[in-house]
Amino acid sequence: MLTQVEKTQKASEKTDSLFTKKWQEIEKKQKRNANVQKKIDTLYQFFQDNILPEEQEVSALLAQETQHLISFLPKKSFTQWQREELQSWIENNLSTLSQHPFVDRTLFDKVSQEYNDFLVGYAKKINKDHDFEPEEIDYMCSMADEMFNGEKEFTDEELRTFMRDPSIFQQTLREFLAKKAQEKEDIDFDEDEFFQEQKEEEFYSNGSQRYQDQQRAKKQEKLKSLFNSSKLNKFYKILANRLHPDKETNEHLKAEKSELMAKLVAAKKNKDAFTIITMFHQFMPNSEHILFEGDDTELTQALIGLLNEKLHQLDKENQENKCDDGMKSMVWQRFSGRSKKAQQENIDIHMADLEDDKIRFNYYIQEVKTVKLLKEILSERYDERNENMFTQGDFSLDDLADLFR
Image (cartoon, rainbow, N blue to C red; front, top):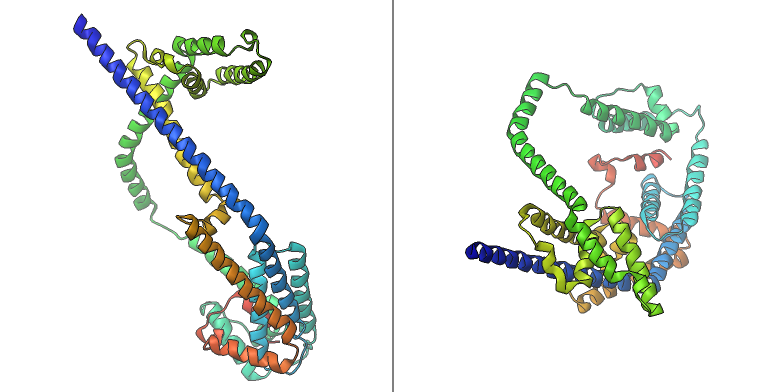
């Protein structure tokens, strides 16, 4: 009998030790999360105060540069490749602005509309009865053949229509690509073979999945019983007696206990076992041995399971704080470093890049006033790309609007 009592005491002490260890891990990760969140908030505040104004200035200058480039488009002295290079420059700028998280959307819409207005107006200058040269038709035919992978043929009249209004070509290509994508999804497959493979996969996975489902259901059932157990009610009553505001004479402490009591009542109502156990650990640390009184091993495991789940949630919370889709997370991922020095280096490099951008944009806006100088810059841009983007058949819908302008 004495041996059994000693075994029970040792088991209780072991569980109590495990419980304490879990709480220490939870508290450690809670502090870690709080520290990381504080660092994220501090860095974001620095970003708003010091970097965001620079970002907004750069995006505004990029928009101004784009407007400045658009003002050159009506000039008639550009060759075909020069006009294509200029429009490519403008469209790249618009693409950057459209994805820039700090751009003034009203300004972006204004610049985009200016460019679209030019394209529409320029297209109207092409007389609908104008007859294109055979070389132009052949060029359009070869381009269409490459864009449609040789799967679609067009008459000369259709090719002329495309050259007069590139938007029609764009729409035709979009419809073709959409149809191909749908066909890819609808590719016929051997249903017997497919379902046989499915059955084999199910055969090997169902056993493991069934076991996991059973274990999960068993765990949930035990946790459910924990919500309704006399043990949890006992925890609640002990806490209620400890925290009840009517037993407090100090008005400040009474208000504080009123909030704690409301939290405790809500936890009981919502069957939030973890909150009740957390409050028990916090306010009744000398009574934690009560958690493991008796020999209900499964219920004890359920209590430990709650703590393990909390540990998992804390890790997930920490990861989400650093890697979600929000602005704070984006700033953290961009500038944070393994040390304060590394973080400052990231900030300094980015600020230097922004300053370079401002210098470059201001140069194009303020200094490039003549077509002659712009042509020289277009030639440099052309040479840097080594060859015209069309020589490799690297076409995209965004390039088509200016093909025959």
